[in-house]
Length: 446
Image 1: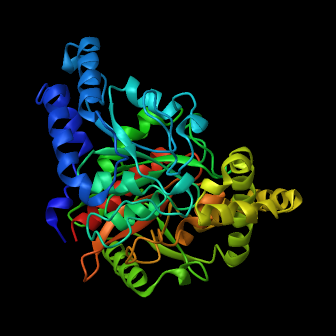
Image 2: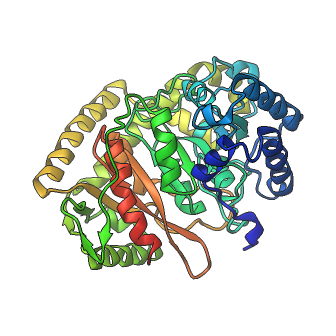
């Protein structure tokens, strides 16, 4: 590993420094652009942008004019953010990782970008995505091992945070496009409850699943950004109690592990690391309960694919009819498959999803479980750039629309990161982040 490629930056520290006036936004932009020029030719996290430095300096000057006193500025004052290239940003074209003419894909600036800019953030640029947030990979390489995939489809956003190009990057997840690349790149990936961050201004993939999420270097960064981006954040939800002298305060989270055919999909390295993580958490006094929540996992897979393929085909019906010859083979095959799906089958799969949500919530309540744990991916980042890896470990939680995040959780003998997936209850994103901080402290202290 070229250690100069892996240098994640704390969003909390960077935001505090900028609001303290050191550095100024202009100096910060100079450093940002120098880092991108040095590193991005090696990992290709950003979509190339002629004139990036001039644009950012103009945005920095406008920001200072609006907020002459940094101490009174909004919380992300001067922070540079990467934006996945299916998310519309005023002044930057949207390519969607495709060869389609950008004007065809144009649209109003996304709500999530409006919120970032209102919070004082600067847009560092568009980050590379798999074509239309599907399975056809982009050019991005994994900063830990450039010959390995960074995951996808939010490949550029994950790699940009891992490489320290930006401390915050916006992503989307339909099935596993936040949690998996976060694990592969060794950063935190947060996928909120379905719909918690508006998708207005985001190119659709499968609207019944599409969720806007984010990457940061650590959980504190996600906890800073999430309230600024999510609807109706409960600021009264405080941090979870932690250990004191090895003992846990009352109310420590109870952890559930969904055993059975779902967990069996994890490969040997992921499963061995997961078992070690569970043992560590149990040794620190946390209760771990094994639950048979997903006995019909293969049927859930089928239902999720039915909805995904049908909606992808519907989302691209007009574009594909006009520009089908410009689509990559993987995306075109997915769209053609979706055209064969009977609308009645999609409707049945969505009804099954509702029943699954209710069954899952009831199973958790009966077991008294606060968080569900699983590997974030089936293993470390695969060798090669022709695939973004398997999203299967995220599938049931994305199908149900539950909030989930990936915590960095060690590395393999080859130095590739692994992640621990933490799943909360629908709508309880605040509680998920607070309780996950307990787990992060244990894992960091191991």
